[in-house]
Amino acid sequence: MSHITEELNSQPECWTRAAVEATRRAHALPAPGERVAIVGCGTSYFMAQAAAVLRESAGHGETDAFAASEFPHGRSYDRVLALTRSGTTTEVLDLLGELKGRTRTAAITADPGAPVTGAADDLVVLDFADERSVVQTRFATSAFTLLRAHLGLHTDAVAADARTALSTPLRPELVECGQFTFLGRGWTVGLASEAGLKMREASLSWTEAYPAMEYRHGPISITTRATATWMFGPAPAGLAQQVAATGGLWIQGTLDPLAELVRAQRLAVAVAAARGLDPDRPRHLTRSVILNPAGGE
Image 1: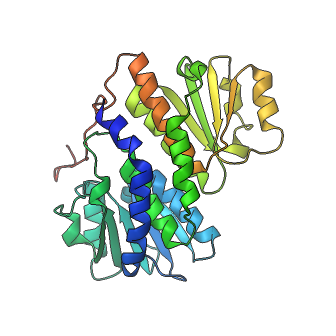
Image 2: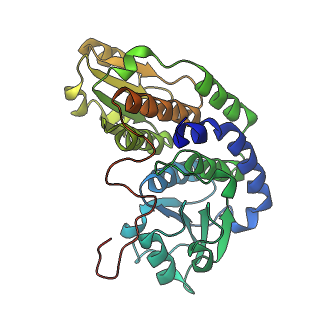
């Protein structure tokens, strides 16, 4: 069994623990009414997008999400929250250093010994969700669950849906598809982007992700009989029929969107296996991007 398979299978238990940590570490997380920016890189950036929309739509305060390298220093925030599995990513550490003493910062990480522990004002460590695989699965979803539980929006039903996602066989025709498009609305747009990233990293697949209403504005033109279009959450009226008319495979998510992401993670591993790839060691990627002062790696 690959590391990624073992790690993604452990997600329901990790989410239960993350929900408990949300109560224990509430003081380190954004308070209601604070103006907040959530930052990250790669997977963490997409999970930040999902968490930001979820927080703001729940009425907890204005919340933005940025790639750490694109943080707008001209804006004022009450708190900046960084998501970083390794706690070593250069862009995140640089940003936290620049904000030190000016804006309260917090970080969610998997490694209690990482440099981020001294860079952020507050820290939440999810060491039980750390991973050996380069490709992130359980840390990202556990960090999101922590924030979701902090908002009072996590229930046991989410973990139950994840167990369903892990135990239900994937549709066989999915593995044969040559292109995958993931769609979301609201907070699930970030999850759709993360699903696409998982497919690219683990299986070298051609994947795209869009807000669902944007799919009609050009991207649907790529859809063929070899395309799977996967909707996270309720679909806009008529979209499933439009995709079906192209001959493409329409997948309507029926589980909690975070559990649908688990299904997409499984698909990435299955496609990698079908292509003879090692999903634990995707080409050109490392666990963390650490740059030297000249901007190289």
